[in-house]
Image (cartoon, rainbow, N blue to C red; front, side, top):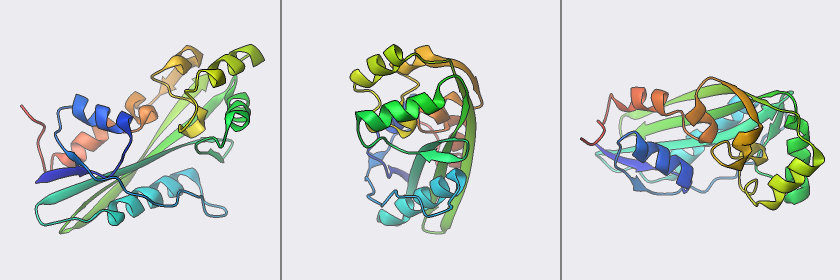
Length: 187
């Protein structure tokens, strides 16, 4: 089967390449606004399914779609609207644990399957100076929870309980397990 990544995320593409898969990219465009009362795990599952269904799927193709979000105290922290929103999110995450959820959907001519991976991340207490420095770096833009664990924000991370690649944007071990039914990594 030909693997299609329904995402324009360079982080997802890099993770999928790193574990040996070749694929084409067909980015999906769906409204990522949470529904009232929607939980983080329900949100990422719905968005991954929506992205997988938004991309045309031809015979012999397997669509892989994913969506990642951050939640703290059951409050969903998607991508920040601006620098002030990013700073607000970082203050909320400072000195405590939060959850990162990634929903993944695989779609093919015979149907689809979905799963959600959850990882807990502990942040150190952040000073206003650290928050300002990080926001000024530009890294929070376009990232759920206003941070990228693989970049400068790694200095804030005390502990990760679960899949580290999940926090980057794709739980590669679980994805590989599910993909094994359909495609094998390149040799």
